[in-house]
Amino acid sequence: MATKSKEKRPGRITIACNVCRSRKQKK
Image (cartoon, rainbow, N blue to C red; front, side):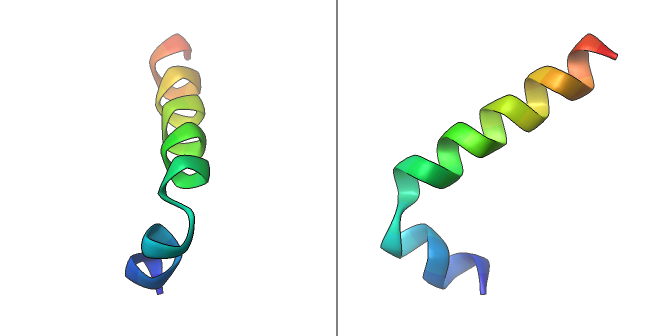
């Protein structure tokens, strides 16, 4: 499922990943 979404909109996923990582590091 993640592979299909990545090919459809890699930009959107990249941004979400960055936000998730930033939130985890800030905690």
